[in-house]
Length: 257
Image (cartoon, rainbow, N blue to C red; front, side):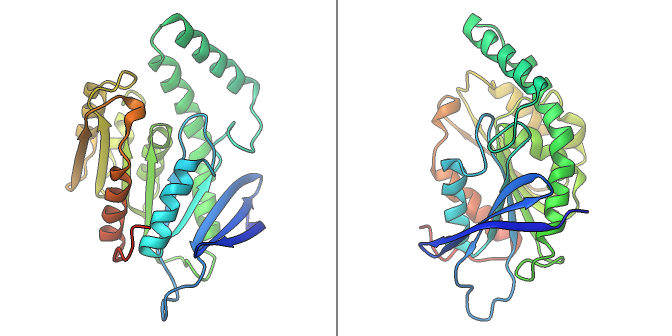
């Protein structure tokens, strides 16, 4: 079992940012710089970044800012295998080259992305669970507090098997991913789900998103469908995800900074 080692720290605009390592997996933890009076612990939200991105991508930073300043959450992201500060393997390079070739030729990318993400999930889920173990040893988080998950696109490809495998996660925001490799894991998920899709998505067709949404066994699951293509994901959905997690992790939204 690997312990968490902080490697850098900075603070700005009421947010404490701490880089860390769990074994050789790099991550970042954002926390309130000054906890609310009397609040010894706060819930933890794990976030999965998108394909080709990294733990400090602007989308991750933007969501973290709203979750930390709006609800007082702790928010953690780790680099997925072959992403961010982690070296690419020969397999990573092979799959990425095949994806670029298919995109340039106008061929379907789904078979490649689904296969590659499924392999990343096999590696990432144990890493995420070890990271969660280590984070819950921190006194400001603790082992008995609620845990949420947010991951769109590749964050869903890795997040669905993670949520299915990890009973400590009590609510999740997911969406915009092909269902092919995720059906069986989705059928084991019973926690509340907020699911987003783009109705005119040229990459992940609406039928694919609807099929994955239907597969979740959750009694409470909400579908948010917005007009537009894959890259037209509306920012107001980020605010919705904050309210969803606040409701299910037992916090109040005090700000939408």
